[in-house]
Length: 342
Length: 261
Image (tube, rainbow over all chains, first blue to last red; front, top):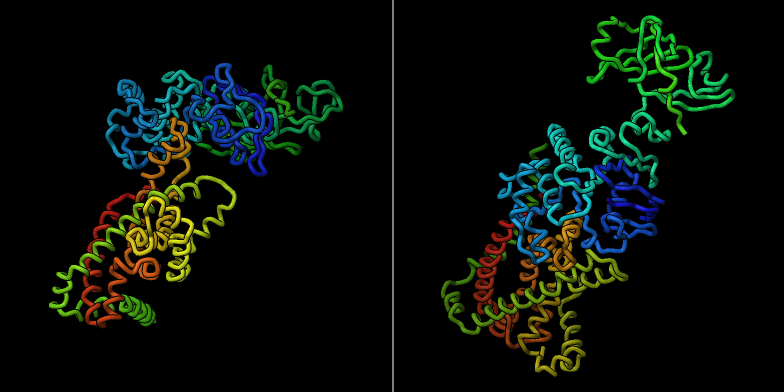
């Protein structure tokens, strides 16, 4: 386990401020370009000096240690395999640089697990992006690191091969049994792979949580926007547990006179032609403005005089309900599904 | 109109090529075979060519030894006065080479600081092979350093980053990552530097008239005996240089440029 404690560092005009989190299992550091993800990765690896804070590896401080003594394996965007060396020579590099005899038993064992045995005698420039990443990952494991840092490992991979590599990374924690910190700007990638997501923006941590929690319950407007939150409802309390936008009343956790911004995912809003008995208290009469096939689901854009909502339904439901644009329907959702943004 | 424009470009290009080719052809076809043969068996000519080539190799070898680490420091380390040092490195190609010879004489001459220091070990630079090597080095080291610098600059920094995480220290990174990845540029710089070294006249003649390197011998024969006596030496120098350069260019072309691939 790696623990980052109140870490701060300055690079030009950019600052990483008071960063604290734990790398355990498969942790994904998520954020937009310029958030400071790679800088933080460099700081953990020992490639950048920190201003303040500490980095603990299994309880011991490694912040003052040289990069070669930190026990950190790193995988960069394109793998950074040395182009002047063959695959096997790349794998021998961590041994030879320390004047040690390569342990071919370990290399072979990992090569079998990573399904790259056939590539060992190949030249680096004949490999695909995914093959390069697997070999680079294997190479970094040969130093027996306490943690693996993966810097946007899928960004240089052909989109058709990305899914295979994602599956491989998903299996990685079983294969290597050390904590992994994976850096990405892609929320879907983070959602698929992570045990824990750390959202970084402008040098500060916005939220830490499991993927489902980040997806359903964003702590801030930034996280909501970054994770493509579909619905935002600015409500004003008209009585206990009842808010309003214009003449539209919505049951939610609000007191009279309070103003709150709520979010709700499109898949938590169902649609119906009729009112029905349900534990959901919010039934809003709305017009179907557009119906869009988004490949994974059907996205309905609904509106009334006061609000616009997005709802996703299955293709089967669409055909079953025989919905058409311009028709009036009920959008139905639970008060509990509304998440308040702080 | 298009053809007319192309014709202008072609004409200018041919004038440019002729500018280089004509003097060479004039030497090759304007030198009688008999005088080439006698120059080939002239001990003084052959000795001066061997001296030029070996002194060139020696000076280039020393330049690699001291120039590559200097290029490394400039590219990979931060220190005060780096820009000034880079400008100083360019000076030898900008000043007249006779001036360079005078400057070297003030340092390596019998009364110069380094001249005095090395004389303790019996090493003298005026009228010796060591002086020729020093003269060659001064005028050619810039080419090696600048070419090596370009090679170092074009290395993807991620290779260095990864090498560090794999346990390599600065020394290991230098020999196992930086040098192999920029070898093509270092070899190119070496070729340019050696070429510049063996063609040097101005700086060397101030320090060393005897033993004569080929450019000095050409000058000596020309001023003493006239054009017809200097032409066969020029012919031999041209042919030997051409063979060397073709060989080196061939080796260089077979090397992979990892930083561009």
